[in-house]
Length: 127
Image (cartoon, one colour):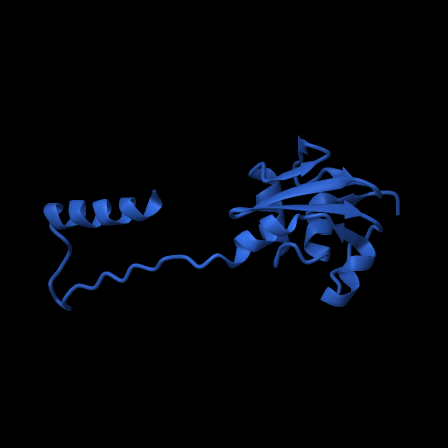
């Protein structure tokens, strides 16, 4: 096997849970091979460096072996070397602030004024 589709490879090494998720990330310009955006059908070879944007984290892998078959997590280091810095991995475990907004049951939809208040509250957490 000389090359494998990038979406199959990312699914096989357990970066994404489903192949559809993997293909969507590729088509959404969240996957790069050697610094160049890669579509789902792009072929990868041994030695390629992959950069994957997954939420706030930028993951980096180097391909050691090729595979199209999904494997157990313990086998992944034989196929891909994780080059992701610890500072990026730490972003995965940052706690998110949760806002609980409740309304009385049966009070209906929020009025325009209530909606603006809710939007302002949610915008204050995005900053």
